[in-house]
Length: 147
Image (cartoon, rainbow, N blue to C red; front, side, top):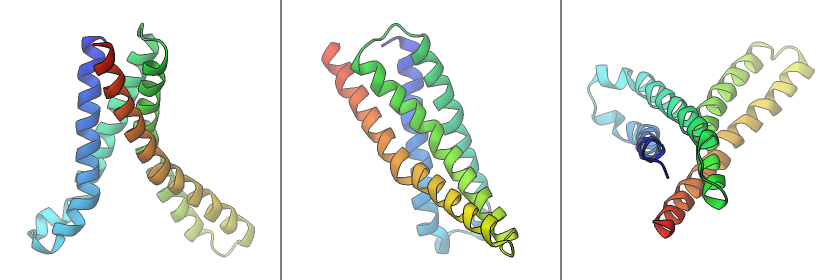
């Protein structure tokens, strides 16, 4: 793995850990934090998601342009695509949920948006999280073997 790809990969793993920490850590600490920090939770979460998205795009581009072939490339592509899918899926889920609430008086549109926001939730949370973990662990294992 090239040095640039390796640096972006480890930054991506760190951004993923920060994102997960923000998602699960902030609600647990909410009662113990001062009011100003408690109000900044959405900003912290959006920042962590944005960093995850940008690093995922950079990692995906570097992987596509790289010389790595075979399983390692597949694991790297899975890691990058999952890192992009998490924040995109969360934003689409929330946007479609809000739109579904606004259009709740139109039955067919409301039900269609309900299905779509559920699909994006399932893509963002269980599927992309597991995909990222599988891709990152596979990348680490295969990189260690070829080293």
